[in-house]
Image 1 (cartoon, rainbow, N blue to C red):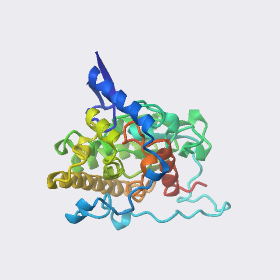
Image 2 (cartoon, helix red, strand yellow):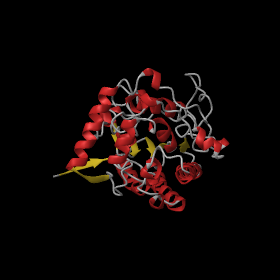
Image 3 (cartoon, rainbow, N blue to C red):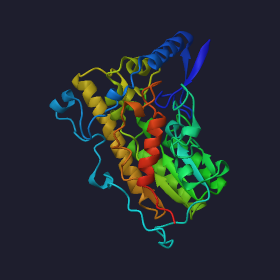
Image 4 (cartoon, rainbow, N blue to C red):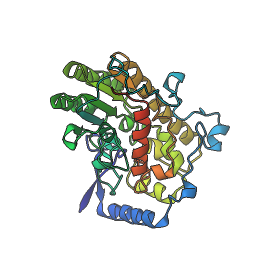
Length: 337
């Protein structure tokens, strides 16, 4: 008997990122996950993330780029977005508070692995979740459950965004969040990563659908996380290495996680560079529409510690990580009237 396992970086190709795993492998993964729940790898003493711009000594010695994700000056976020006084009138830059929203994206926005292993957990979503401990965008806006739509799909890539955008148009929402692109870089090999030109054209198509169908809506585009951070956070954890290997998680970045061979160091850097290029495309295309706001790269450079990552797969955000996403994206997002 085979078991279907859904992973963000599984390299499955289609929406849902599903791949079949043999019963023996699934049993091994289950055993590793059980071990993870007992070993307490996320103790407070382990939760200190790598310093911003820091990287393993082996990479430094080879002259690798020092800033994770190589953010440009334009992508570096301000310390905190200014908050106008409560009596500031509504202007084109201070839009009215939305009455509905839709979240587009992949497993991160679906809350995958945030509360149960290998399952979506949308109530923990940074964008539309109902959980008080995450304090999502929808919660901050005071939207009822029926006015917050989570159109994201686990395993989705940029090619799938246009379909999600059409769904949002049909929902007639006032506000749209977009966080997608990790799966375009997280493939079984570098050769399978989406090219920057294709990534840009697919994003341009999806944004055009929103612009035409929801001309008054506001759109927040979130930068693709730095996948190298996931490697930095978990490569020294035995459980993480076992799960990454057995579940085939993001092998373009996470294959041979303990290797310091030049070829593996260079491969990881090339994946990070591809994500940097994706984020540049997101910024450039978003800037063509006044109702679209890019997060300034705040998520890409965010330092996610070990407690911010699910200890079931050491890749997706935990509930704590989802809360961090909600906080930093809200701070760099819209100030509503």
